[in-house]
Image (cartoon, rainbow, N blue to C red; front, top):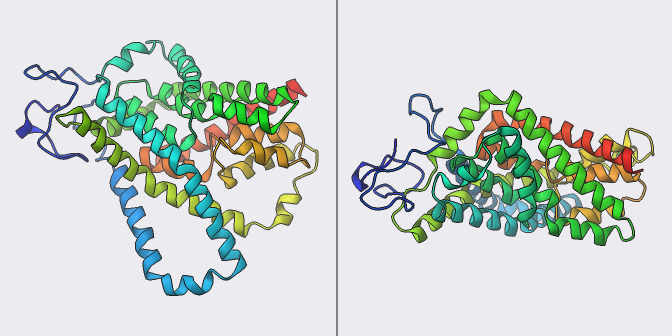
Length: 364
C-alpha cells in the first residue's frame, strides 16, 4: 500500500505524515516492484529497532558496569579484548557510514523503478552484472549490507543484490591495490583474489536464485516496508541514513565484541596446530578469517604476515574474510533476519572456500 497523501501514510520506521520524494506532486504513486500485499508480507521488520536496542543495551551495560570494568581493564586478557573490540569497530565504522550514505542517496534521489530497469531481466545476467558492479564501490563488507538492502527495496532481484553485497568488498580497486602492496612481486595473489572472489559471489548468487526462492519474498517485503516516505529529498536522505545507521550500528557492536572475545579466548597453540602445509591449512585459515573479522581494506597485510601458511591458504583467508565474518553475520541477521543469516553464511563460506581452493590450485 502506498502513501497518496500526508494523512494516509501508514506507520513505519520513518516519521508519519510524509510522501515519497521521488513522486511528482499531484500524480499517483507508481507501483513498487518490491512491494507485496500486506497480508502476504511477514511480520514488521525489526532491523532498526533491534539494532537500536542492542546499541542502547551495550551503552547502558557499560555505564552500569563501570566500577567493575575499572578493575578488570588492568587484566591483560580483558585489555587485549577491549583493544581488539575498539580496533574492529573503529576500523569498520567509516565504511559503514559510507554504505549508509550511498543507501540514503539511492533512497532520496533514485526513482523506485529506475535501478530495476537498468538491471537485466534475466536472473543469471543480473547476477553477473551485480558481481562486476561491486568493483565500483570502494568500501568494506559493513557498508555493502545497507546498500544491498536498499537495492532490494528498489526492485533489484534479491539474488543480484546479494551478489553485489559479496563482490563489492572483495573486488573494489582499494582492496586490490592493498593486496598488491602487501604482496609485492606476487601479482598472482591479486589475480587470484579477484578471480576467486568474483567466482564465489556469482556462484552464491546463482545458487540463491535456484535454492533460496522461499526466502526472497521475506527479504523483499522487509526492505520494501523501509522505503523512505518523506517530502523533501534532503529529509529522505537524513531519515534513511539515521534509520540504516541505527539498524546496522548495534549489530556491528555485537559482531565486533564477538570477534574480540573469540580472538582473546582461542589459544595461540590452537592456531599454530593448523599451520602445516597440508590440506587442513586451507579451511583452517578460512575459518580464522571468519573469527578475526578484519576489514577487507586491511586483511591483505595480515595474510602477508602469515608466512607459515601456504599461498593457497592465505588466498582462502582473503576470499572468505570479506564475505563471511562474525560482524558481517551479525549485520546480515539484523538487516535481513536470523533465518536468512543461518542459511546465507554457510552457503557463502562453502562457495568462497571452494573458489579459493580451486583458483589456488590453478595458480600454484
